Length: 303
Image (cartoon, rainbow, N blue to C red; front, side, top):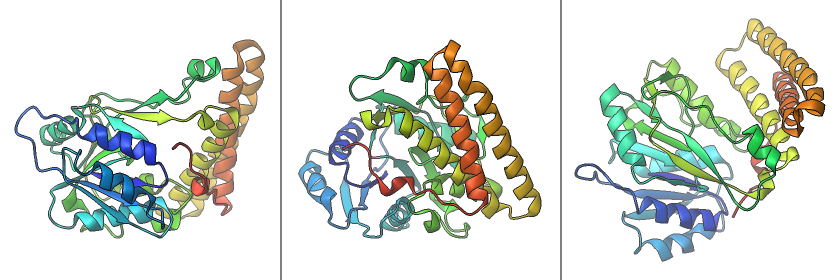
């Protein structure tokens, strides 16, 4: 199990304690936790040292001083080496349900999949505005177990290690602070013919800090997602037709959001926010098309 972390010491401790509660329906496989501390000062090392004896599984912590999520993810794969058949990624602001890893492994076997991914459910820290809950802004799309996908994310994923060798590069380090390197990687995995499936009962919970439950963050996040999506499409399929499609999509998203936002006067503030996010997503796509890069991960949320 691999965890990339950056100055989220409370979250990391919560995660490692949660990983110690993992359970399996049969004999448990050999499991090891690899923590990659992306803080050059090694702030997570002390937490790992304190938790090593309490952890149910062997725990390693290494420092990756090059700042950026793909650097940390690639270092985790490097540290795992050739001694493992599978690597599971989970984020440092998440905690899995006890059967999480067991379910990923089971679904991988049932569907003979190369990659298995599952749902990430929000868990809020502190009080949340009613419009946040009503708008379901932190709810992510779910699928029927076994549904084939063309993407996955490292907040909840199991990867068969054999797929790394034939891939030309792993997580793209050009996307160090922009986010989206996991989407970029798994899009290439799917294009290479590997099988990605959904496991709806392999659940993890994500702790949402109060700094994210606001209008500004929600709009900025959708701008970043649109920006990264546009850049990824151009990188994977560079052509004039791709540019035209992205430009058209960006304009449509902006127009749709501009029409929806005023409906918030009648439907409520959550409707206005949804419209504003559509506008931000379209603007992000156009920005990415023109070469703009939005580095959301310069700032860390949560502790």
